[in-house]
Image: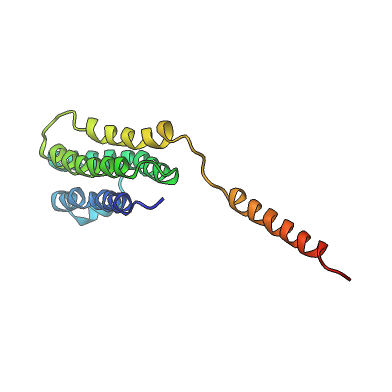
Length: 161
């Protein structure tokens, strides 16, 4: 269950996704003023085109993070192939950065195919290829207690009173 590279990549994706709001918020402040940007309003003023794309790319990253994080954690929980998981997470991180920059720049492509493929690449080893079940407390504790019980009974049977 240890794959530091995968955990690092997950932290990078979470941090990157968490910072994506800053450019379009600053654009909103510059375009409409601070009061409008942070105030209570019924309708949102139109953002500059690049800022609107940045906001949509951020929402897309959040939607994909909700899929990616559990897939990655599930793969790590079942001890999937560490190298395959690490490669998939590296691809996902790179694809997230490229998608964000390309989308904000207005370069329209099927860039989402790569992040979704990376999510699938993480899911496949964890669900399809690794058909092991998670070790539970019962799997570990009950056999140990059973051994201790039999040792205690054996000890008591050998006591001469």
